Length: 126
Image (cartoon, rainbow, N blue to C red; front, side):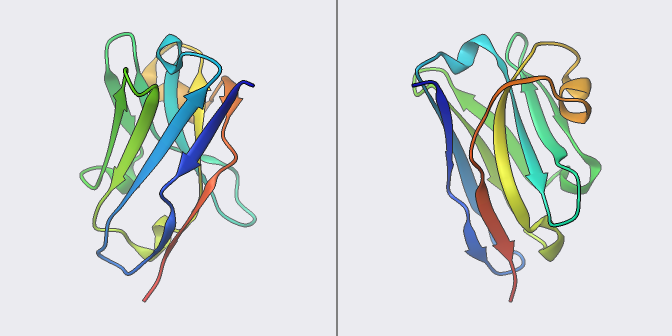
């Protein structure tokens, strides 16, 4: 079964941290670029961070620069999103995706995804 599974979401207070994981099964995540996307009610899915695995170039949307870090583990067949100094506006459902290669910014802004995960809820609230 080919799938991506996210984990690590939860409820956290403003200023807190979470680490999201995205694990692939049935295929090698290293054959694709990887992105993290966020969706909130009534809004379109937004590209938060992407990594081009051919050269490890990265992209971050402006609102998370300096706070979030995308990474991957080839051996674990997984990707991660380290989120620090979380703010209430970071709340949403976070999805990971296996993406077609290309310009790393374009991957996030106009994603061409082969696989999507089911999403994990992140809630930042006091």
